Image (cartoon, rainbow, N blue to C red; front, side):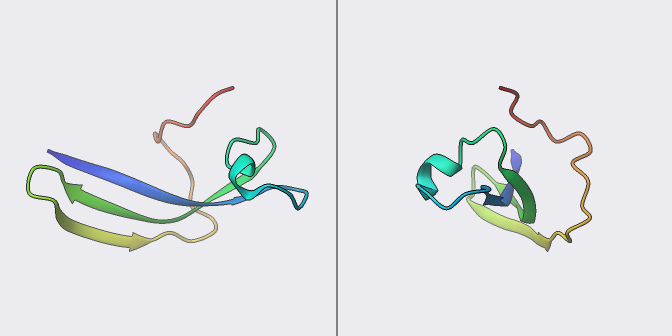
Length: 64
């Protein structure tokens, strides 16, 4: 079973509580890199950096 984990940079408009900014509706979320992990063996299969122009494509994103 392989899973892809996408790591994001979250930027909120105002300085404040960084933990609360993760859940901000108006925050800008920019993908930084992803890793593919084989879950049963806990093996790292691939790491790829993502550029600023990366589109989300079919990646599910949270809707509030």
